[in-house]
Length: 211
Ligand SMILES: Nc1ncnc2c1ncn2[C@@H]1O[C@H](COP(=O)(O)OP(=O)(O)OP(=O)(O)O)[C@@H](O)[C@H]1O
Ligand SMILES: [Mg+2]
Image (cartoon, rainbow, N blue to C red; front, top):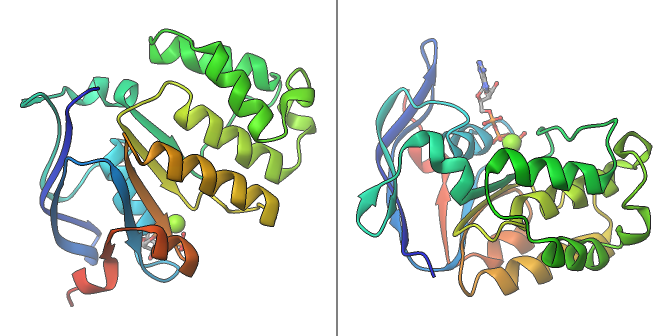
């Protein structure tokens, strides 16, 4: 198992003169589910995008560390999984082609056994050859979760993982999250009470505001 540590120190973000969050710090090196909470527009997505390397901070330090050595930001995406309602899949491609392509661009060894298991778990196996443009929003969301976890990264970042999902779909996500949390650091940005309750520790963005 990879010895992974995520470390943030006084991380702050502002757009123009508007402070979104100020001085968020923490260190995560044990598997588990960790929350990022706050109302709509408070900055949850902004924070997790920075953690994933999809956006940059205005101030403060962020490190992804493997065995005591910081990982180059260009390699973060191989070691992390990220799912959110706003990332896009390749609409013209089937689920299977998306999976193949995403494995390829990550430059990691493809694990089709796990990918197929996940497709079945999320009731998409029988639709795996259909183009994603023919999927419902809930089906797309389930495929995004698959894409975020299928390379078994040590850090998984989920922004509103159950957006667009019915109760059945939500339960499927919770089963995967619970199982992976035994050996994976999982960051969960959410507004859902039940999901916050699943987290052992939660950053509340509202505690990091400043005028
Ligand atoms: N690129 C940007 N330029 C300017 N302001 C931005 C930008 N991205 C986000 N914001 C602002 O940052 C604040 C936080 O947005 P963010 O999307 O992080 O909130 P959130 O907590 O994820 O909300 P939600 O629960 O609705 O998903 C909002 O006021 C938003 O308008
Ligand atoms: Mg958001």
